[in-house]
Image (cartoon, rainbow, N blue to C red; front, side, top):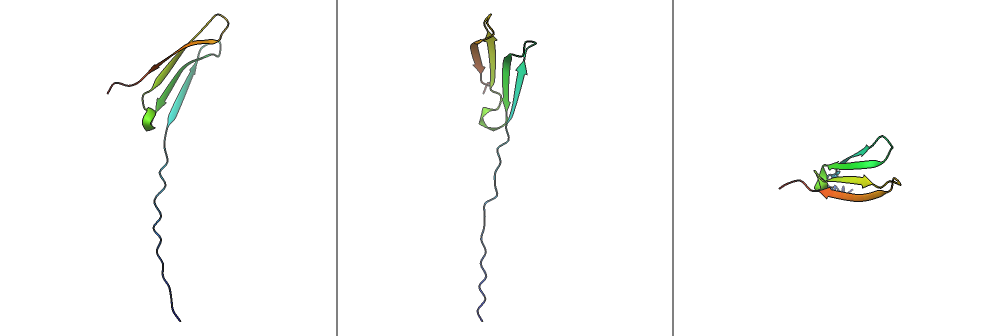
Length: 65
């Protein structure tokens, strides 16, 4: 009887870890999004709104470096 032994090497799974923090004002409007982890680490987006509560502008800032 022949015995066959096989070894299979499987790569370890890599999990991306990203945290996204959402900040809202007193009216429930999104005013800031901050990302940490992964390639977007330190990226922030600030939102302004018009009188009708629509998002008017977004300013995206990247970390220095």
